[in-house]
Length: 123
Image 1 (spheres, rainbow, N blue to C red):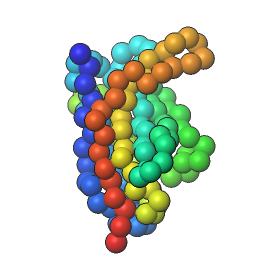
Image 2 (image 1 turned 60 degrees about the horizontal axis):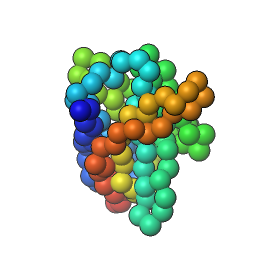
Image 3 (image 1 turned 45 degrees about the horizontal axis):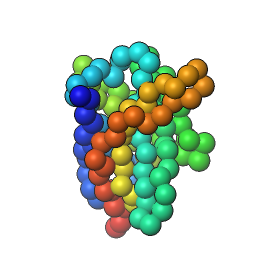
Image 4 (image 1 turned 180 degrees about the vertical axis):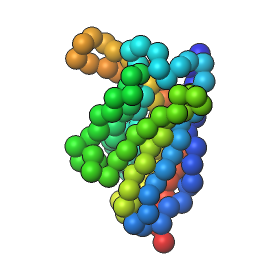
């Protein structure tokens, strides 16, 4: 029932900030105990988990991206957003948003995915 849809610019210039929005329908982003995450896949490479925001608003990030990444939410719109600052061409990727559901106290799995959106970093 829950659906996720990514949106935002498909082209970003180097040194600028990438900003994407995930719109969630069929479920609330404040519902216990889900997390809402961003994942990316550069061309020809594997998936990279970037970070997530939880049902209470807490955030967690990949150590390799933490210094450049911010995830926030707008509960009135049932949306959460990704900001990736100081981008380079190496940030070109398909970006996905997803819902993470708990397995137990220590682990979650990516239960529902959006279709993804390609973002190209180029001048």
